[in-house]
Amino acid sequence: MLIKRPADIEPSEITSESVYQRRRTLLKMSGLATAGAIAGIPLLSLAEQEGISGRELQGVIESPLSTAEPANSWQDITTYNNYYEFGTGKADPARNARDFEPRPWSVVVKGECDKPGRYDFEDLVDNQQLEERVYRFRCVEAWSMVIPWVGIPLASIIGRLQPNSNAKFLRFRTLHDPERMPGQRRRTLDWPYTEGLTMAEAMHPLTLMAVGLYGRELPNQNGAPMRLVVPWKYGFKSIKAIAEIEFTRRRPRSSWEQAIPSEYGFYANVNPEVDHPRWSQARERPIGFGLFARKKPTLMFNGYADQVASLYSGLDLRKNF
Ligand SMILES: Nc1nc2c(c(=O)[nH]1)N[C@H]1C(S)=C(S)[C@@H](COP(=O)(O)O)O[C@H]1N2
Ligand SMILES: [Mo]
Image (cartoon, rainbow, N blue to C red; front, side, top):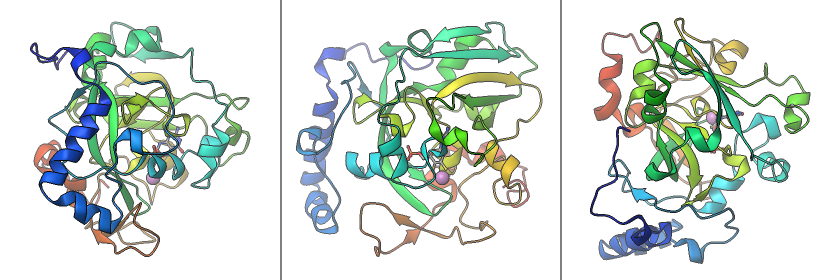
C-alpha cells in the first residue's frame, strides 16, 4: 500500500460524477470551457455524454498526478481502439468485444517472487485504493488522446507479490482464449499478446493498473477487467486483459518486438526525436478533433519527462528505442 487515501476524505463524499463536474467548473472559470467547446473538446460531465456503460466504481479519489488537459469523450475512448484480439480495425473492438465476459477473472502470478499463485481479480486489485488518473495517451501510430483512467498503482500490486532479488523485469500476458477472443483465431500476432517492463518502470508511481474509465468499470474494448497504463510509453505497452504476471531475470520479448523488432523496441518510450522507420514521431493527431485537425508536436516521454527521464540516464535512447 504505497498510496494512502487521505484520512479526511470520506469515500462516499466523492463520486466520479462530481469529479467531472468539478473539473468542468474549474475549466469554465479559467475560460477554457468556451475555447474547448469551439475546438470541439468534449467538456461534458458523464451525465451529458452518450453511450456510457458499466457499473460505477465507488470511492474513487482524484490523483494529483493527473494532467489538467480536458479529457476525450467516452465515445472517442471506446470506439477508436487497438485490440487485435477483437480485430485489427479501430472500430472492431467496440463491436467484437461486446459479448466478452470479463468476470470472473483470475491472474496467474509466477517467476521470481515469494507469492506466486492464481489470484482472483478482486484479491489482486484493492478497491479501497482506486484513483482517477487523467493521462495523456500516445499511440505509436502518431495519434493521441487524454483519458480519465481509474486504477491502482502497479507498485502496490507488486509490493504484495513480494518479488525477490532476481526479479529484474516483469512479463505480462493477455488471456489466450480463441473461443472468447476471435482475433486469436488468426495469426495476426504470436498469441497471447505479451509485454514487458523493467522493475524500475513497473514500480514507478505513474504506472497504473487500470480497472476503470470515467469512474466506471473498464469497457471490454479498453481491456476489461484490468490493463496496464504506462503514460510515457507508446500505447502498445499498455497491455489489456492481463491474465498473467511473471517476474523474470531476463528482459522479456514483447509481441510487437517479436513480430517486427526493427519497428517496435522493448522500451517504446515516446520520443519525438526517434522516428518509427515508416513515419515521423515528431507530431501527433489528437483524436476527437476530426480527421483533418492540425497535428501537434509530440513531447519527450509524452510530457512526463520530468518524472521519468532519470529512469533512462546513461541509456542511448536511439539504440534502446
Ligand atoms: N492485449 C492487447 N493489448 C493491447 C493491444 C492489443 O492489440 N492487445 N493494443 C495496444 C495498443 S497498440 C494500443 S495503442 C492500446 C490502445 O488502448 P485503447 O484502445 O484503450 O486506447 O492498447 C494496447 N494494448
Ligand atoms: Mo498503439
